[in-house]
Amino acid sequence: MSEEILIFGHKNPDTDSICSAMVKERLNKKSGNENVKAKRLGEINKETKYILDYLKLDAPQFLESVEEGQEVILVDHNEFSQSAEGIEKAKILEVVDHHRISNFQTSEPLYYTARPYGCTCTILYKEFVEKGLEISKEEAILMASAIMSDTLLLKSPTTTKHDIKALEELEKIAGIDIKAYGLEMLKAGTDLDDFSEEELINLDAKTVEKNGEKIVIAQVNTVSIEDVLKRQEKLEQAINNVISKEGVSLFVLAITDILNSNSELLVLGKKANVAELAFGEKLENNTMFLKGVVSRKKQILPNIDKNM
Image (cartoon, rainbow, N blue to C red; front, side):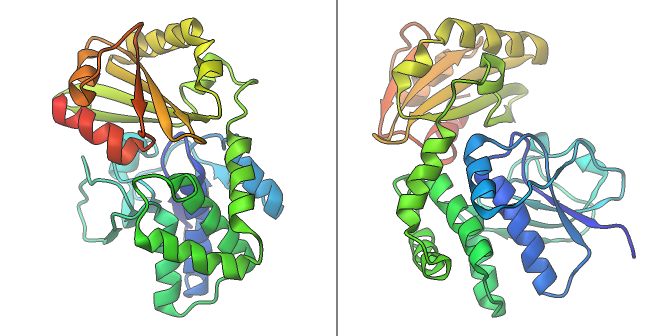
């Protein structure tokens, strides 16, 4: 047998990143390509652990880097800065993603599916349907979990009619009250007490570059912004360590209240004023409150990007 084709999402993986890799492996195998294997580029978070424990599934194996010429499929990302070490020299066969396309190029043609949906798993659900492939209960729950995670139970502005329809159909296959399950899943992900400050700022952090400046936008979900901000001094120390060590110009930590759909931004770095320009608010004690802002992809990153 030839070397396996590796499937993986981005570094610091969230639920969609892990579930998409696992679902894509199953989809490809059902399509006749057995030589594929899901991997992960970081530790799973508590929300994802809840899902895997519920389904009694193991997490994909950890992958730190890829060798030159390794055949890979990317899900839930395309930017090389968010991918495995060595990705520039890998052979990318396919991308399935719902983010902007940035800093991406290949030496050979590939299959590329990019749709502006709320979740990568919504795209994969449509691929199942288009190919006429049966979706198991396990696969339905994996995809539904990712959709509810990325869209915050369909309340995020990233939610599309495609996500809503997919979740409706997947709930029928799953045979459970998917919204009740989803709320418990989201709550599991907001248990932050046993994370260090260093771990908190890396739970779901994405690095992008603009005009030669490195930007990190991290996000944590909670049911109490105030509880997270009790740790502000230590969070700032951890963030400043990253800024100094990695040459980051702007570090934004979005603390998102999943129940009330608001976020508090903790902003540090020499380009901190960009956040003020982006949202028309003043930073007070390095923070700003943004009502109705929950999406990094649609509400935070685009505004930051336009003002860098």
